[in-house]
Length: 134
Image (cartoon, rainbow, N blue to C red; front, side):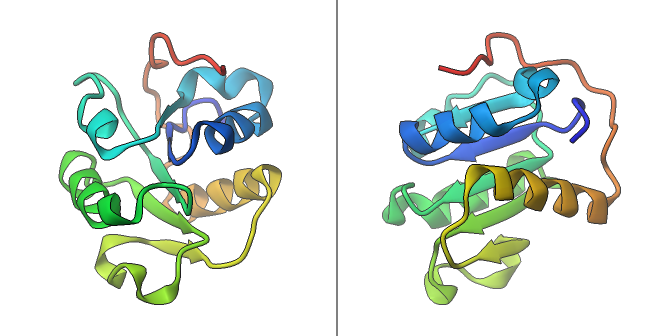
């Protein structure tokens, strides 16, 4: 995965930390995570996102609101749902869905495939200040 791909992870702190640790060494600056819809809305204006990964540990009642918010704020971002049932969200609100369990390392490959399909790997954007693995 090229360092210019910006990844937003939505889910539990444990899941977000596992994803961050699975990313290639030079990619950590392009990763930001949130555990709630309110923290998603509170992200600074300068944050850019290429791929948003919504894990099943994210609050079910906030799923629709988060997907709609991501679509409005980052209209070109790919939204990947992990571990959600097929009827959890309508297709226009997400791009890819993996219904079974997936390891963080498998997720990195899924992100690469998704971004490659969109043709946006290597987009030159600055690292997100303060985005460091916990």
